[in-house]
Length: 266
Image 1 (tube, helix red, strand yellow):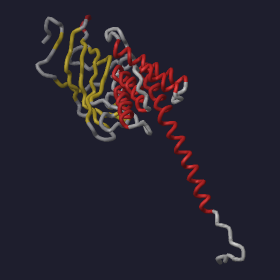
Image 2 (tube, helix red, strand yellow; image 1 turned 180 degrees about the vertical axis):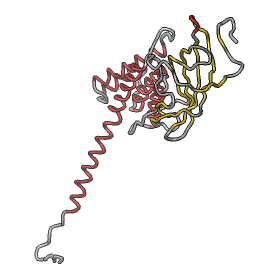
Image 3 (cartoon, helix red, strand yellow; image 1 turned 120 degrees about the horizontal axis):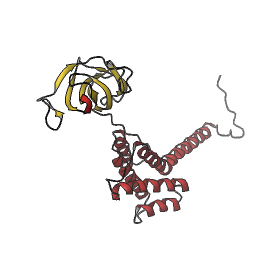
């Protein structure tokens, strides 16, 4: 029933057959209701998620002005790659409680795909935190991602034996020791500023969107590249060159002693 708060809540969620939407030219219309693509939360593959069953479940509905209804629906979707079942949660407008959504305002998948990164040649404790920062960003936890990125910068300085007080001093010391270049020092400070805003700012006023968080994570990656990954690649290449040189030297036959003839094999 509809209460005084104008919110309709059934005793329990009810199912309704999935019907084709009539307003195909409406900007909020979801064109392919039988299947849609996303990154599967189970296998991590970009795959078609086919509708599983013929019913959607309405979990809430509220009357709007003009008689329209704002609804939230759940659909079961099966990954074409791994067969795992996910829930697609859609919210939007419908003509009435029993109608399908004709305008989708938002949608979310459960489980969500969580994507980290592999930071090769970076010490494991630092690499794991950097990867966790990327996983936070992949599910929209942008403040957490930036706070962890700041921690990665400070841990990087500590890993190089820098123990001066304060992250700003640690970054400057990385540069003073020739471990990072000038522009990478500036990048480290930008990561620090971002993390400080999260740690010390007014959370009600500080906003952080996806693009800014991802930019800060890229700067974090550049610091790890400068301090750990690039030197490790150079060392590997140097070692390969020295190994080739040693192998060639071992192949050169020793000089023949005077008066001793060497026999050639047929």
